[in-house]
Image (cartoon, rainbow, N blue to C red; front, side, top):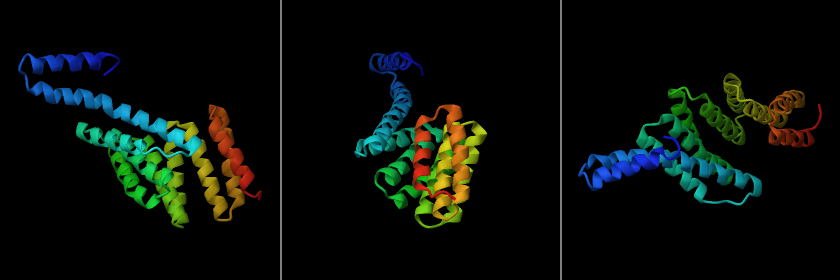
Length: 216
């Protein structure tokens, strides 16, 4: 529902319930308002997450917003929206709190839901962070498979900034397992992809990785 459409529709339903005695309008109002609140909660939560990445100052409201969005999307029967929200709940636990174990089941549920509706974007995010959880647990082969799947999904949908970011993650994993040559191949490709789509932030990640990973 675009622009002021939802405001007008909610007003009509209010009047139908208040003055017309149509009690069914109340439930329809909930649907209209939930469909607005869910993406708004997601958008606000994502803004808070980027702020955290920039200043590393935790804001617990981020989790509240993502949990609310997941609840609303589930009520609306929107599996793609719920999968996205569950991913971000997991991301809060893993990235903000440093608790990958708590985040893992959210990523698993997110991936399964997204796969059920063919949402490859959310699948790529969920499997990427499952890869991070595996890496942190020392399961490097599984981590590599999952990070590679994330990159493949992003290639399929043309999400080039995400491809570049995924290649950086593969580079760090390769370096951690002693394969500097592969790490630099990933970084070379990542730089090419990032430059082709103007992903300046990812270009910065690539340069930091080059500074940290020993040359082969």
